[in-house]
Length: 359
Ligand SMILES: [Zn+2]
Ligand SMILES: [Zn+2]
Ligand SMILES: [Zn+2]
Ligand SMILES: [Zn+2]
Image (cartoon, rainbow, N blue to C red):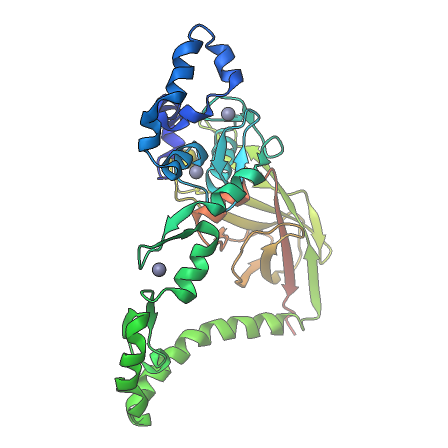
């Protein structure tokens, strides 16, 4: 549903404004705007037809996000005029506006939306958490604040895996059949010879991860380590079609000056038109060096930010001629996380640099 957000906010907003979903929001102040026909409005509210649609569905229409029309699952934001949007759409609007270099506006009322002007609506968040929703597995209804617990640990129809999954059993089935399966499962009576291939494959999977962490741990014993917390601020390129990029102020490490640069989906002409975005960054040496600097570096979230960046080690040899490390993808979970990062005014990162000594 989010896919065409960048393109169609204006159409969706007029759809929303015209749809019946917001009828119950017709408050007194909206009536003042349309004071020419107050009577039909009043009689509309008293119409018995409304009761034919259950309260739950009517509330869904009122409390849904004005952008994607889904019911928000976590935070609910509202514009200055009270129009609601889910956290994902809120971040997406801010990211879009950043990419287009214009102010974000509420798709409903066109008022400005800034990081600071939108507030959470806790009452709506709480009301939503009490609304019933259907279990994916048994189709019974539960309050939304209980559904995760029900689906993960209570529901008899929830899909589970065999306890011998770790030694290669691929059985998946409803929880109420699990006991029966496990008592007949062939895996626990397999021999070591039969199981060794499966275990090797599982080991290989976790090997990559543990190697990464071991390498990071080793880096921390390097003699020359520098840490800085660059704040990447948004700028526009002076190309014909200006593009957003981010750049930090200079920071020093190992007696040289450095900056960090970031771009958004640099392979795409207009990233504001696509929904699957990513952020690339590069580390740039700004000082002249007489001998090459072989640098390992880690990029982490900055202090007081809560981006989810996956760990990775980068390496580049900075010389007189190659002062810019190749641009690398910032390892974030997905495009939603990317929008969340872009929705803030600056990108706060932490860079740990390790100088490899030649001797
Ligand atoms: Zn939404
Ligand atoms: Zn609004
Ligand atoms: Zn269930
Ligand atoms: Zn099994």
